[in-house]
Length: 205
Image 1 (cartoon, rainbow, N blue to C red):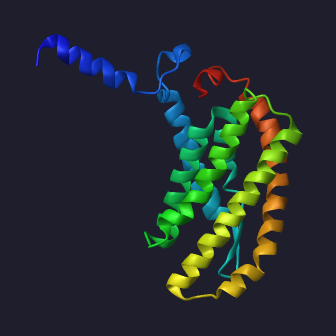
Image 2: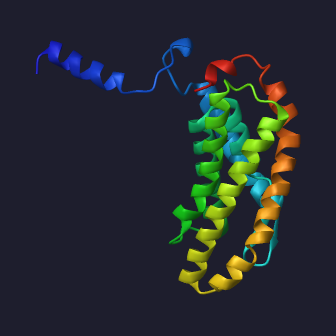
C-alpha cells in the first residue's frame, strides 16, 4: 500500500472518532476521564456505605446520584458510562459475576443516559422543576427495569416468586419517587456550583 493510500485509510478511521471543535477534537480529555473515574468510584463507595437493604428485593440507596450528576453535567454518554461502570464494579464486589450481572447494571446506565439526553436537549440549563421531572421519569423507568430483572434473577436462583416481586413493586415506586426528590435537592445546588468551575462546559458532549 502506498503512503498516499495509507494516509487515506488513516484519515477515514480518524473521521469515525467522536470530535468536538471547541475542545481540541477530543470527546474524552484527561480531565474528563479523571472526573468520570471519580464519579464511578463514588458510586461504589456510596453503594457500600450508604445503602439500606430491606429483605432480598429492596435496596434503598443514593449511589445513583453519581450517574445523574454525570448525565446532567456532561451528557448522555458520560451519564451512561458512569452508571454502567459504577454499577458493574459494585455488583462484582457484592455478588461477583453471575448470570444476571449484565441485566443488573443496565438500569443505572439507562438512568444516567436519560438524564444526559434531557440536559443536552436544554443546553444543560435546567431549573429545579425540570431536574425533578427527568429524575421522576428516569426513576419510573429504572424501577420497572429493576423489577423485571429481579423477577428474572429470582426465577433463575429460586429465592422468590413472581407474585412476591409484583407485590412489592408499589414499594419500589414509592422509594424511587422519594429518592428523586432527594436527588433534586442535592443536585440542584451542586450543579450550580460545578457549572462555575473552569473547563466544565468544554467537557460537555
